[in-house]
Length: 476
Figure 1: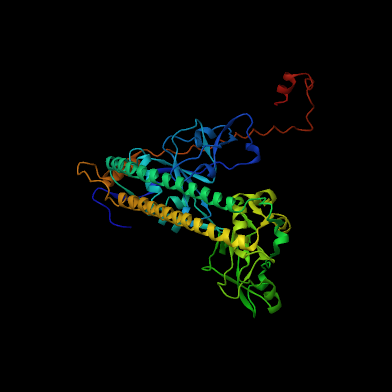
Figure 2: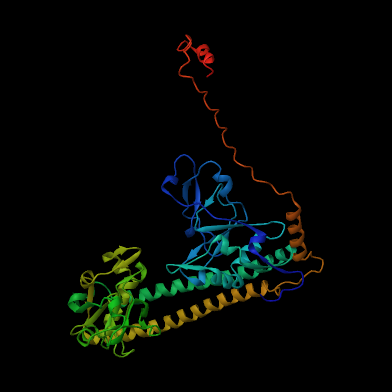
């Protein structure tokens, strides 16, 4: 750990917070008689909560007292598919009364004498803690996961309580300005995407003018699905590179991460790409379904898999025109009318794709439209890239602010503040000197006295079968 300013101390998160897991959602907990608000992973973003959709869960005796969230509690996401977003967290501000949390969220309740709840939220979402979370998180089936025991090992820089509040005030002022700038950037990006859609839809009307040929994709060219991947083909004598969904972006092919597969010569020839082929994502999130790019010869001698569709132009169709048509359909969400959904992924089958509209102007007109659209889109793409760069700078600024704040370089230290180490030691001493509460042992029910033995030779009294007195005479 790095050196800290005077008065600060490194502390384990388990020493300054109470850590509590959540409730597992089960069939028996379907809302019935005692339904309460139930926060899930989807509700917890980085530094804020999304409470637009809050589910309910059935609680039983004593559970509300144990799991109910208090103002200032920090909710940490236990698992996340991306290492860069592991352990995202947000502070509970008591927006909803009597809310509880699921078992994929971990609750950190700060010790108010040591830790400001706002400071905890900010430091937890800082680069210093993010580095530790990536180090302690485990991986289950490719999913990064945390646990109560792992969180207890995380260390945070702890300034004096008064300085924590000064840091929070300074950070909230700086970060609010960064956030306003980011909101303006996002609004500008949305407008640029709308403009791109308008340019494409205006250039490629559906249906087109009367002198255009009104065709379908299947009539304008050939459509093929790529080769299916198989473990048996991961090695072999004819290894060749192939493109997959991860390589195909809008009007761009990313060759930084190519994979290889064994392609016998006759199979490779079937799936080998030619310059001018258009590749489209067959399976993708709905808004990106059918994302197209043209193969322009790089990388050389490459094939494609069945996660992509290949369109090869027929007579009278310029490949650049085909790319415009497919970009137009993606931005206008045309493919959503023919998609099918499996496990949250939208799919566009070759059969459905062939039936999609494909207007075809005369070749000379295609070239005129292509040039005009390229000029307009080039300006918009430069604007979009500038906005993206500004967004990255804003993110770097936020990270720099957090690093400076939690290294003690954002606000001045006050020698009058009680050092965090002194307060930690005093609270530790109080805990050790406090009388330890012994857990009460469960009382077992007393064993019943054994029934008296009856001498079978002894004659039964006349009272047997005549009520309680007869039983007493028997000694029962």
